[in-house]
Image 1 (cartoon, rainbow, N blue to C red):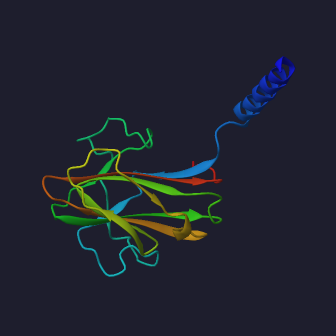
Image 2: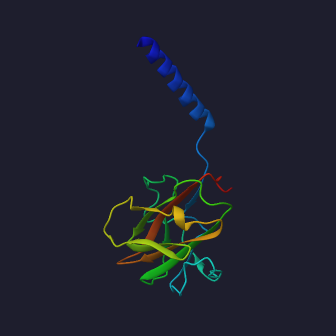
Amino acid sequence: NAARMGVARRALALCLGLLALAGPARALTIRGDHDWVSSAECPEGWAAPELDDSSWTPVAFPWLLIWPSPWEPDPEARPFWEANGAPTACTRRTFELPTAPAGPVRAYVFVDDDYELWINGERVGESNDQGAERPGEIWDVTSRLRPGRNVIGLKIIDAAYEKGAWFSLRIPGLPERS
């Protein structure tokens, strides 16, 4: 028994050492940043990749009303906000994928107040919990992503005061963009 325990401990130590040498798993992470754009109008197809959003306004980043403060799902994420004064705003973030995701992709979302999440023109889900505390919701969006141009759509609905969002999407197997 003692000999087997010794072998098991050495094997465990070897595995942990190899994991440490491998470093963190590669992943492309999309967060709140200056690449999100916003419109007070939500035209038909606003979350589809084909929509031309070149006239949309960049979101305010970071949202200083609630940042800096930690967000459990992604401590590196920074909130953004949309201050157009309208009760609803459609925000978008485009990105390119060279291949389909290599593993499960989860979107982590917290919005003050309510929201609808869209990926490539398809509605993923919504949250109507305007009084909720962080961290928010988790959505599996693996099947919605594809090689080429992709669009995250976040329709932010304000119940009172201001509207803002924390967002993080981690796509395994791809390097962080520089």
